[in-house]
Structure formats: structure tokens, C-alpha cells
Length: 121
Image (cartoon, rainbow, N blue to C red; front, side, top):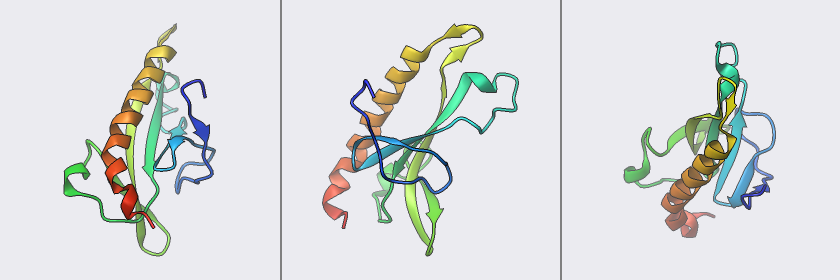
């Protein structure tokens, strides 16, 4: 919240819980359960950046580096990007670095989808 994120009203298709946004275009959700059964699973979380619109996006931003599809009802797809974020190394907390990474990644991905805003119905 200190990074100018607000709670979103968008629901993620596979992650329960609330997400955050800085704009209505891109929403970020946190998956803290995947990988929790690994020995260092409590040192990581997954940030899922969701572009919650079923639309065609340019080929230049499709792929593992940027956006892949996530299926929703009625044979539609949203677009999302997942990142594993390490916020702790053993007993050393690196939360400030994790937050800086999240904000930087959010701005990078947002800049890619911002030109698509005019096509959202």
C-alpha cells in the first residue's frame, strides 16, 4: 500500500484472496501456497500480474517473458505473468528488495499493456 497500490475488485481465476493495482489495467495477486512444501518455500512467493481482459494482444508481448494466457469461463482467456520473488534468505529478510522488484516489474508490464487500453470494451 505504501507503493500507491490499492485493493482491486478483480478476482483472479485461480488464486484466492485479494489483489492490488495501481491502475485498472494490471492487477497483482500473491500465491504464497505454491511451493510451500519445499524446504525453503517460506522464503519465496509468486506474484501473478493479471491483465484481466479477454482480447488479442500483440505477438511481441506474448510468451514467458511477458504474458501467457490463463483460461476463464466461456472459452475465454485472461493474460498474466508470474514471477517467483524471494523475500528472505535464511534468517535475512530482503523485503525491501522484493518490494522494489515488484514495483519495477509492475511498471514494466504496465507499460506494455498501456497502449491496449483504447481496445478494452
